[in-house]
Image (tube, rainbow, N blue to C red; front, side, top):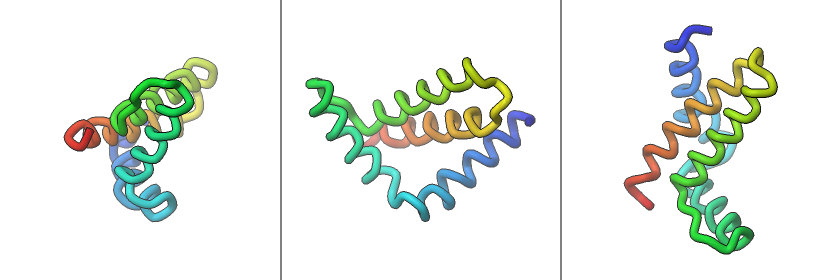
Length: 88
């Protein structure tokens, strides 16, 4: 899969598919951040959630380089993290 295809697919997922399935990204990441903050005993922000989910996808890439979805999801999570920085 070419880099432009990965980015185009990630854009489609974060702008339509995932929002229709999971609701607003900002609300979802903020809720996850609250749960993780309680569990870890440290403050986690919505942008941290995006970065850590990206890292999860990187770990999956390490063990399964042939699964294109991990690259797409990683790009999407990092883009979401970048957007969340403004609201953290």
